[in-house]
Image (spheres, rainbow, N blue to C red):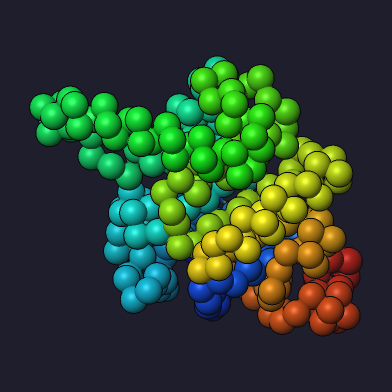
Length: 246
Ligand SMILES: Nc1ncnc2c1ncn2[C@@H]1O[C@H](COP(=O)(O)OP(=O)(O)OP(=O)(O)O)[C@@H](O)[C@H]1O
Ligand SMILES: [Mg+2]
């Protein structure tokens, strides 16, 4: 991915197997969010290829990529804080659907599908925090930071993705809140053994707990791939973080 003269992602090559969680780390500006933006079709890459179960991702629109099974959360909270939890989460399901004239013509069916959607949102929210499920029609802004993050993750999960991209879910939270959110994520992972996750995170403790494998980016290039224990001992990774040798 190039931005003018800047090569933000450079020959990045990775595979994410079903049921695997990849911890993606790297210094600020190393290309982590750009990678998510490219994978979700927000940016058109200058070159390269990505496939999800043999489907060519880069040939698709962002909506079609969502339908194919890629969902994400954003580094900065993107909830509509004055809208209800339900509206925020339902958006994750509806933005991939075509709710055009046909839906209007079959109002009873629309009604049934809205009822089903309410139940799905309630079920998902309940898995993260029953207090959210009990207040589905309260504005999202009423909730604490950790619950807002949970709502965002529910919005990503409502479309039943195959690949979930989490961009620094701990941003703006205390370490205790982060620990609880990661407990939730680990619980959810156990119940959804096929889901693949890429987690971008600065907190090494989180990466250690949650990742099956780690990848480190520096200046858009992959400089390390392997288990967490080797990551912390890796000379290239240490140099990238300490900033020496540049
Ligand atoms: N739309 C854009 N136009 C121009 N440059 C961009 C754009 N988006 C990202 N960049 C540049 O690409 C590089 C990678 O940025 P990116 O946001 O992907 O880093 P990051 O690893 O997510 O950093 P952080 O840890 O701070 O979130 C940076 O140099 C950034 O300035
Ligand atoms: Mg980022």
